[in-house]
Length: 266
Image 1: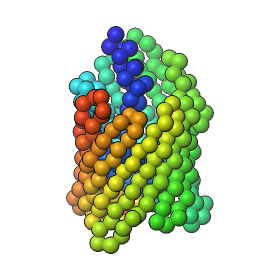
Image 2 (image 1 turned 180 degrees about the vertical axis):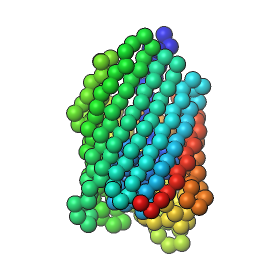
Image 3 (image 1 turned 90 degrees about the vertical axis):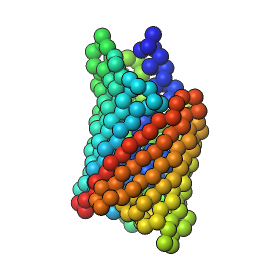
Image 4 (image 1 turned 90 degrees about the horizontal axis):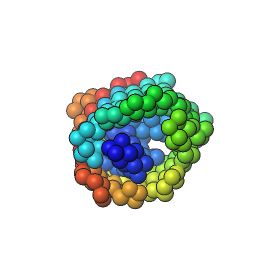
């Protein structure tokens, strides 16, 4: 019974998390952050100032037996990203390994490709592995960034009968103010099994447009499906940044997301 409940939980709420700024902005399509470019939208790699490593931990929906851990790495010079995530529950385990590559075709247009390997482990069943291909594209029209991501282009199917649907994400970023402080707006429209819209607001004192490499940042975000509200901040400490967000779900309990990132110039 608990296993059936777990599958219903995942099919309804479809938990996924990239950490960093997107953990409290909720929007991800146009957010140039380590976790996003490594595991969601590699076409944004050209917007990143530095390379880096990011670690994220959370206990989704404050369920004691459910743990989520991920690590991301981005190499700026190679425009290459690596990501490994784990979602675990007694009797169930889900692991995702992603390799991403970004390409710059012109001064305004860039593209990327994401290769993801999924592993599912269910008690008393054999492990299942399947692969997904996800291209992405970004067009820069200052002060806007427009991104399009196509997930699961090959529509892989697990041995348990779960088919990953073709999903597209249209992301928009806009720098609305740039003086001693800046204000950015992020919007996502995503269509897969469900239709979802996300809106995020970011305030920062010393940062470059669309990137998170400099200065204290804080913000909040809202989402329509599922209905979510999040608030959080990113605090730089030399080359290391501490990120925290608090997220509310309209039916489940609130939960906390902790993120550590380290930036380097290559």
